Amino acid sequence: MKKIKLIIGAGAFALIGLILFAADHIEAPDVKGGSSDITDFYAFQAEDTDNLVFVANIQGLLSPTATSAAKFDENVLIEFNIDTDLDYIEDLVIQAIPRNGKMYFFGPYEPSSTGLNSSLPQDGSEYGVSITPYGSSPMIGVKGAMKFFAGPRDDPFFMDFAKYGEIIGGTADGFDNPGSDTFKGTNVLSVVVEVPKSMIGGSGNINTWVETKAKQ
Image 1 (cartoon, rainbow, N blue to C red):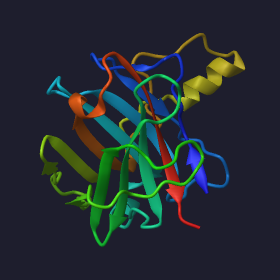
Image 2: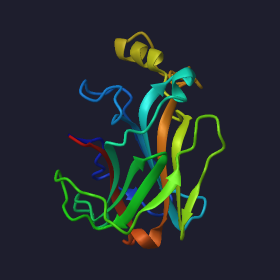
Image 3: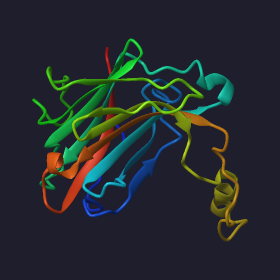
């Protein structure tokens, strides 16, 4: 199964500092609550303005009591797709897959196939970082100018679903400020990679999206 979660079209992500994010905490039945369910995707300029950061959050709505036992599925590949020439086809991918307590990253590199075809990690480009246990300080891996992280984090997405329901139902005119965070106290499993813009290429905008691919 291959699950496409986000494709950015006209609203392409600019290399010069715009923040892009998408969230999907209410999922289709086939993946809802499963190990391949993507809750959020973020892409933004890093503190080092020569770099970009890509973040995929999966397995959302984890309670604190359930988080310590939550694990990345070794049968699920996480793939960041990057379209540098704005034709809506990935030119580069960065992939991540867990093995024996580490998250292994591959890329960025040109995939052997694009679109809905399967794509396998490219040998020789991998870097493994230990998966940070729940409640521990983040363990950041570094390879050259790239940085990597994998582990549980507090769910950063803010949404007041109760007020949203009232707005849709016509009993409220708008959201409160700041409102009530439906996801407060829940966690996700995060995969983060920071990469130099020079490794991505292009000179203006890119399209970017994330997928999970589950082994059958």
